[in-house]
Image 1 (tube, chains in turn red, green, blue):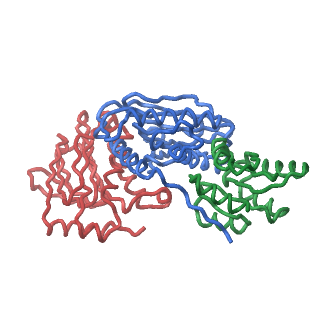
Image 2 (cartoon, helix red, strand yellow):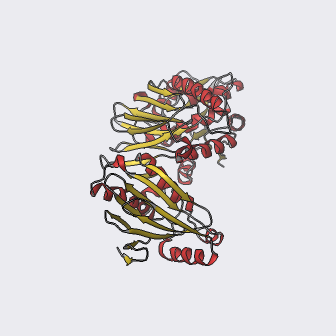
Image 3 (cartoon, rainbow over the protein chains, first blue to last red):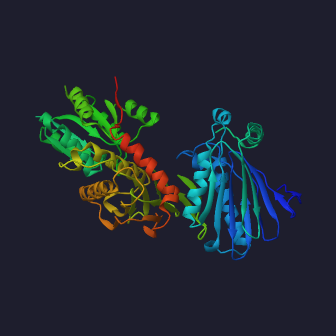
Length: 183
Length: 123
Length: 196
């Protein structure tokens, strides 16, 4: 995993990218930039541990896909991995709460890619609901890119939405380059 | 009078099909799978009763519809066999056609459509 | 449907979306959450094969019952798809037992929930009698959603009642989309192909 560190907000900031996750119990921040991708932020208020991932599923999941589609599995695994990492750090599942962000879209992006941002969000919500993890905040969809900053010890998440065409185009095109797999 | 044989492992489907086509006046017999269908046909052949049409499902235990068709066509090339199934895959349909099915109908069936097809096949 | 993992046991977990069905002869869990729709768990007690279907009957069934009813035909077909999967795995209808959940009447719908619930109950009653599949558990009605975990190789069902936050449930959202779609397309029938 590639983690960039800055001290822009007076604390160390760990920046994660698509396909990565990070869990921590230290006094620091976790940050990511989302276009159509989704980030699940988990927080355990008892142990004061936080975790964040950043994933996307290219395309709708059909009955046929699920056994063969590596990338579909990858998004689902990303959520399981994050929950397991939290448990590995000593969290109990019943005390974990979640916040879900991302799954934005821009018109240009919609026409170019097969991926459906809503499905990314849906998978995250369905899995969390099945795992009995309560979702405290959900900010998803719309023609936005989002910058997410999570404070590890408090579990607070700051979400800055940007509708600026320029920023959005940059985020989306980068994610297209990185994540989109033809299925 | 010749009879129509309805083969499906679901009693609900057998009864639905019977209700739909009984107005043609043919006696209707039922079987639960391909093997039972072959037994029924042989039994009534012995009694001198003619078979007008077979309406049969594909996925059934003991003997499926395609296996029945292959077996049945060895002794009877002329009696039409209509497949009535949830299977809609091209390869499966081709298998049915190659084995000698007269038609392939995908469930759920529209009663009017089933009547039309049965009418065409028994004429 | 998505394939994930059950955290406690490490077994595969197949999460069904409304309208999905899945059967297995291998140890795993099949799970979902239902509100007004019906989750049917079928289990072959001899061969130890099970399957789950997530369905809804799109409307009221006529007085003649399920055999001649076009609405019931849609429900029968959803059951046929599940039964077909079971039969392909080697299950026999004669050994099947059923556990049925859902058909709740609750808030948050443009359609009349009362009406939906009643027509589901009527369909289930007539269908399982007609199929001669014994219903071991029918946990139907109420005003809550139900989370169901089904273990297809031993037929065990784990149920949890969820009575809060209906409006934030993604399953309830998907269910409404499914109900609207299937009620709109309730006159859809399969194709007919005549050879020669």
